[in-house]
Length: 196
Image 1: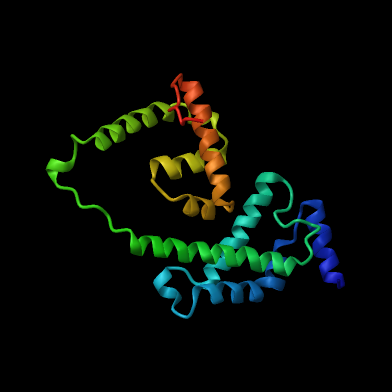
Image 2: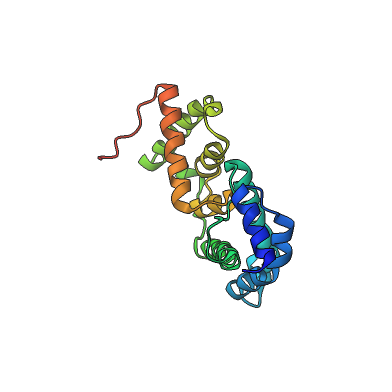
């Protein structure tokens, strides 16, 4: 480990990473990782390798600010390998989202298909419940609120929300579950029986 690496690790251990130095030192290998995943025609995905690197760094900085400890573990074997893996994962999420958008056609509805089916009634009931829960949103943490709004109100995928928050899809599911639990208890609504 050279002196620069030792200085970077000292900042990570103290919870005050030198993000400018990290970016300057590792942006090229991060860019290569993103470019390999995105391929040559990055314009079809709506994201370039540069924006993936930027988004990765931004997510790491936000996570460090939220948790008050470095998003890059100070004891990681290789800072470069960690950053390349994080960038690669974010680029893979970009590709997955692009494929989901291509493959899922929106259903076409006519006026006669708006209400009347059981699914439609459940959707209306769910909407009414969500409106009741909205009055309790101040009980949630910022990340729980972002996950709740993204998933239930904006109908975004867990992967999309995870990319925005810089967390895993599984963590988004936990945030949503926690948010619903807190909101339903506060609103006095019984949650649906999941059979567990």
